[in-house]
Image (cartoon, rainbow, N blue to C red; front, top):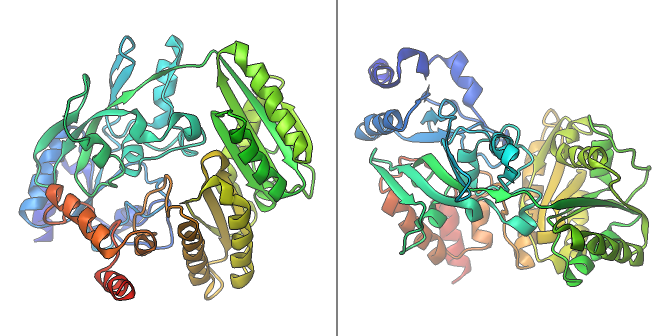
Length: 470
């Protein structure tokens, strides 16, 4: 039976585009979330929408579950096979199909790499705004699945704000077009599908918005002795009416990591926090905003604050920030990155509670986050070789998300729920709210064949929520 399925898939995409040997399959046992792993039944590499549709029809007819996968950079386990699913890898669908500068849009296949789109349109003064830290590697299809953001989402929003239309292969193999240009009236199905983590179908083509590059960009780096002062400077900048393109923050442990990484800036020892603040727009107004930002930082006891002297310095600062996750490898054999959201005004309190969680479990926690919109990325450092430390790290991450929920925030800002945070969905949603979301999913995916076991908590956890809520 197994050989028959492989033969059928090979007949659709070609024998060279199907993996079925164990030594090949283990490469796909996890994505960027390495706490859980599972070996897929097979991996298929379609090259066209027609092949995706045919593969899905083949699997659906035999009740075989499947998982769409991009570059495997996701951080919540959204592409991990827990039950021997077939992985449908979209990396061969990597074409830029159309660029329409007049209407400021582009059409791409799901395997097209994020940063390549900005590079492809830069000669005409355009770019694609969503910029996850993994933008050199991650695919736009994966970004749509997770509703990815990035450092500049404070001003420009996340992926859903830049997707105009989708071509979708439904879990029965039917191909449908949703949205597009011009926009169509009715329900915002593009908005529902963006961020659905592959649980409603497989996106095989997307129409995305292009933006004109701003006339001027300027970046400020502020160094603080105390993380509390940096936190309050963040609120003061927003309160002054300034909406930076990006407002990033790293604490002392994160600074230690990035300074040991590939792009050190030369921060002095013992800094409590740094802010990386970027403003863009019409040149006439930029200098005034820079002066206001510097004044705010000085009122909050900044140790040193300066604007980038040239593009090379600005690039060096950003390279330092964007390597933060990977640089944790200089501090610890393993790390677990979280992705909670909190009200900006609660930042000092939440950081204190994260410090308490660090003490509780005896694990160091570095904090890197999009401070402007309250999207936290605590990095929990641990050693999986030490018995019990992995479990401690996972529980510490859950406690951090509980704190985010307690202060009126969310358990995810841009990494998605996947398998990592599915049980924590009960922190912010009631049983009734989860049931309603499942009903929406089931309209698209009635037999739960497309990326099963993602997003939603296990039935036993939902029963606990029902009992707790009376």
